[in-house]
Image (cartoon, rainbow, N blue to C red; front, side, top):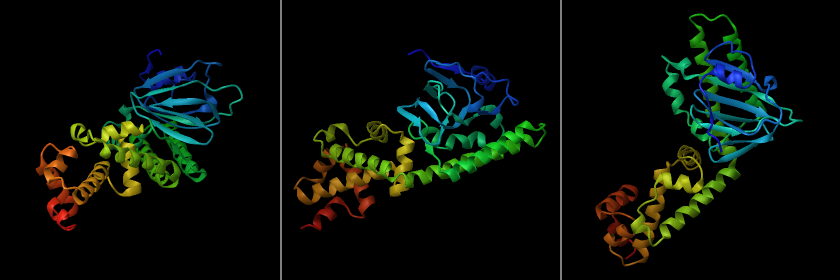
Length: 303
């Protein structure tokens, strides 16, 4: 596969999409209905120097980003940060394509709180693993904010323009964050499948006799095995279980430790070693912090 096309400016993005020069060099809303994509365009991958947020409907081809493939049988919003690769083919004949693309150059954010805050919105990480599915009501809210953005940068620019544009962008991103949290709760089947796979993964890991040499599972290892981002796993667990990923790992570890303390005659040092701890003191300290008992005190309760 050829290297991704590097798109350095919003002006370049407009040119590639067959559109006239943008009205504002640092922010633009593009309607899919206005795109002039060559018919039968082969699959293309691109990497942008700016943020790319889109809501798309009626698109029959697939979109690829990260390790996932998405189609657009329903309204879907997705978020691409600078230097992420977006890959896909153009519209097919017969597509009733609708929606928009919001392009935001980081230079627009300079000197504002959003310049730092935008990096904290986790859906720019989720974007490579989990798009945002909007209800009709949510889509109406998002579209109204997009209309406000367009109205603002279409007017004559003055000293208030940047603050107003930033305010609309923050509102858009905050609503997206709210809707992602709703999605964690309402798409229970998909999310619970992830938790089921996580449970199976952890049970197998802690039952492995090689655990003593492998050490405790890392967040990176777990997210990699589940093929989801670390931030998505963290958000999912926090919403559904109230735990961080590290807390979840420790809970499974303590469960396994309790099993060994109550059903075997292994010493605390031997159990610590089998559970991947290099130093028994570290195991005892963690066990007490989680149970308010030392390993020996817990074991004594079974004698």
